[in-house]
Length: 634
Image 1 (spheres, rainbow, N blue to C red):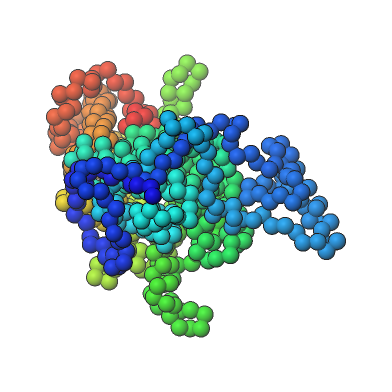
Image 2: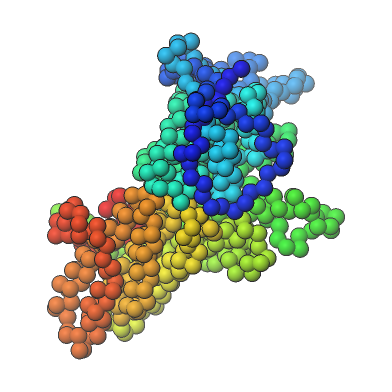
């Protein structure tokens, strides 16, 4: 009988978390060996897969024509020659009264993958799992904090395989991929344990991730499966917490390509499945590909992979609100109602990110309106007459955001009384609020850049033309959204090592940094934006980043980048203000100087780190590309 290799349970700290109830029969007898001794479960022989030993397809790459009578789960669209051949064959079969073969979708999507091995003893790999108690705790963290936001797994199917794995019995899944999924869950949950010392958290999570990588053996030559896509989607979640943006980008892209290769982007693929749970799972996985594709494209500033047409074809379930009634007028069953509401966050997130994607296409693709024009000699010019800044498009997208917010069901609104909301729904509502504020910032940042780069930045007089007034109001709303976002995180920030109602720490750092860059831009118009209010929000943002420094290098890097931007911005403004009237006639100049000490909260590592040479950093106040950058790209 195969054995399980356990990691010492004492090496993990137990963070504070909401209690998670388990049925009495949910935990079988522990398979933990006594003492520090280690055991193993299942040796799986492995080696790199090459084109010659990968599973051959039943179609060729050019014509996509398959042998007669052979069924494949691979999807080939109507433009392929093989598809046209199949249409002709289907027409002939219809005339002759012959049965037309199906794609066999169920067997192809939910089949265990074929394992490749060469029998070499040197290629054997062990399944390494923590003690059952620690494994249960990490899995509970995943179900409580991650699954409500990213429901990529079927919990019932997962729990069945999970128990079988620890019991040493066979599982109805690709065992290698399933153990990889478990290790990714362990890695992700460990990153969520904010009470752990940084070194222990990073070492433990990286160890789980390395095991998952070794087990996964991702190969370009394999067709893939549902389990593989699930593994990649969860892996992309974990990689967002690391300093590996390229891996994150490639993993999401691979999951999209594999899903399309299996036809998950087609509504009929799910409809061909026999059971409702499988249909629901296939839809959720494809929706997960859409969500992660949009999310990574936004955070990386790169084009999305999935087209708008494919997104529009995705079938989203309706979300019942309070007072919902079934077909016969009776209220739906409590279990079904909770399930649909549970998925409501996922549906509303997809809708929101689609609006964000439209904003990115309108204002951030190709030549961005936030970047200065560049002449042949490389000299930047201020973008005062750019046609890309379409106010009509901005107002339409902002209206879509408003409509989206008004369409939120009551259990997903942050204003719902706390006593009436389940803790999971409360957290979903708060996170949706944060995402909405970020979306509004992203949409209106080009207008903020345009407004801050306009003439007479110290003038308190409103502009004469209508478009300039609209741009100014857009800038004001953008700054207000940034301040509100920081306030929400401050309000719900926990100091006991738990997430509380907020997203994971790497998302919080991203949102805080984005909002803080907007505050820096607002300083260019001190006559419009209150220096005191901006300074207060800025200090809150910097304090939040300081509180997050023990969670990873990203908060420290973001704080340093913001401090550099703020200092260089002030230096540029000082040189520009010297040519302006004195402070007696222009109080905005005086206010800006007086607020500098409050605005730039000192952080010791900026002065101690010799790598931060302010004078060596070139900074063009007219180039607002930093408004759309994370510190790694500065």
